Image 1 (tube, rainbow, N blue to C red):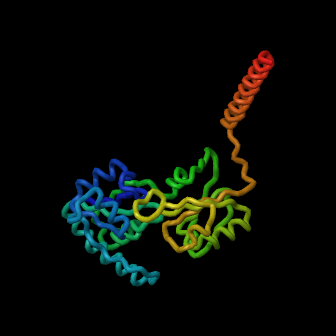
Image 2: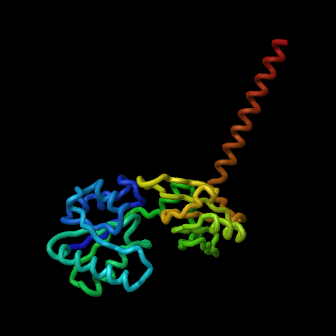
Image 3: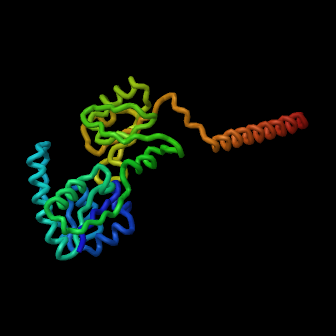
Amino acid sequence: MTLYGIGLGPGEADLISVRGKEVLETVDVVYSPGRLSRAVATEHVPEERIGDLDFPMTRDEEKLRSAWKEAAAEIAPKAREGDAAFVTLGDPNVYSTFGHLRRTLDAFHSDVDVEVVPGISAMTAFATALDVEIEAGAGLSLREADGGAAPTGPDRLILFKVTDAPETARKLDEAGYDVRFGRRLFMDAGETVITEDPAEIDERDYYTLAYAERRDLDTSSATDEFEVETTMDESETTTDERGGEAATDGGQQ
């Protein structure tokens, strides 16, 4: 049988893929690495089918390895006897806890079949939330920015885990970038904030990302011509209307 790694999407329950929802409804047990992913999963499966796993909040690698070995030992028998799922926010293969589980299973339970069901990642959903277009041919870099870090280089950057927005904004401003922030985008848990002012989100929140774009970046495209033509047409129409009104007024006088 199979362990499915399922991406739940950015956080709103109805942004899960059709395939992801179908798999969740059919597996025997669903495991979650945290409170937020568990909350989304319970929108699609009953509470009694959710399996509990304990992951310590630590950077101690030995403790983390021990926790992942225990998780794999819990999940492996379920995936051998039937079908199981491990859910994550976003996509299982993009900066996700699922990668740790998969490597641990490969090392200690290599007979377990694993299948990944992709999900909408916040790294792509941000474009809709912040009304940003990444046009064809554009370069884009995805980087981590924990603790006030501000990686630079490409013309456009998506920074995630922005836990010190004011410090990150200061450094990017000095490097010549304009920055917009998005917090808890498309998430039911907590308040969604979209802002250019880092002071609005100065408290630490793991689910914060930033979009940075060089100030001198040329983003012109072929369809920009449509906007010019529309503006010219509107201007000509306004001139004609004003001319007509002037002639009428003159006749009345």
